[in-house]
Image 1 (cartoon, rainbow, N blue to C red):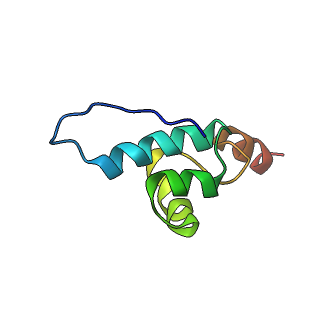
Image 2 (image 1 turned 120 degrees about the horizontal axis):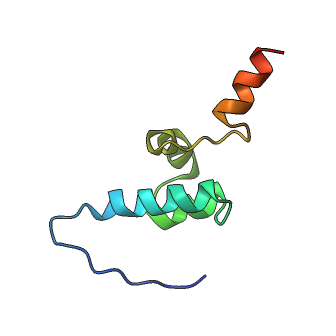
Length: 72
């Protein structure tokens, strides 16, 4: 994997920033849930439990997909 260095204010929550980045990369399919968890420094289970807070689902269907299924 590549290493990227970011400069953020001292007041920034490092773990929160890592989680936001990991959530986006996971959602886009760039990282697996395990890789995203490793980036944040948490267990895969904890990542899966937490990623929903960032508007990311661990399921393949979008909200629109689910709505369509319910109305069929």
